[in-house]
Length: 299
Ligand code: SF4
Ligand code: SF4
Image (cartoon, rainbow, N blue to C red; front, side):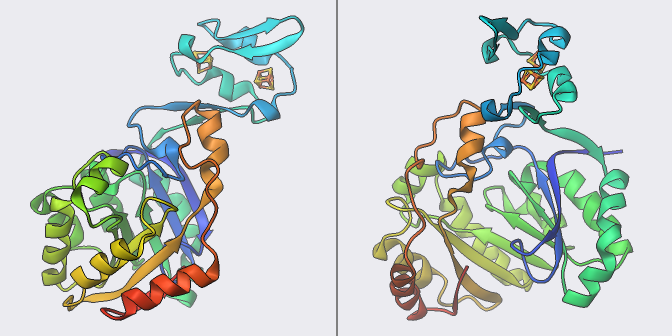
């Protein structure tokens, strides 16, 4: 049976598509957006978080770690991540929540056990399951099995994807999906590469092909101060989408600063540590620019 590399299953989510949803976050991405608010989903391998403020100095980790990555020095707990081999033993005994592992292999049946518990809510709210990430298209066989299991339960399925995968590889999954939420973050190719590590030519081609499939979809741009939020960028993306036949709407997502503590816990540099969400008036300006070309929503 195919297993998925999963960081989290979030029940009662209202942010990842219509209605009440369960969002399954897959680990591993093929892009590296400088503002990612789920940085633990970028790497394909396990991550160990260290939330230093949660440590209560019980030293259980010191006794279980096979690599001596935890030490008691001058009466204080110290963690040395360069010695860690990600075995997870410290996270299993750290009841204070200072050590946490990201990345669990789960079978479809295990995921479905959680998914079906909220089935009445999906039906009442026109919600369902969203497969997110990370990047769902990095784990297509698992996503396909999970989608088929949901369909067998009459549960609607959406995906959140960056579309940076050859279309033929995505198509078997897209053919079974009820709603695609895809990102076009930056229109200029060089700027896109600068902030995400990849060019956007394939993404633009795939959005055109997606429109031909006839599946409802939403295109989204996260508004990241200084990276994606210029008038020129939003105008260029909206103009690119102006002839779309099956796009429900173009969505502008305000900057989400909530990933900051995760960057610290992973010892990752956070380029946008001081960035703030855009004020309502600025979002309204951008919305009006885009509305000259297509239907726009703001989140
Ligand atoms: S087990 Fe957790 S709380 Fe206890 S010393 Fe280690 S990191 Fe701190
Ligand atoms: S994950 Fe394993 S190797 Fe890494 S610090 Fe914890 S116990 Fe040590």
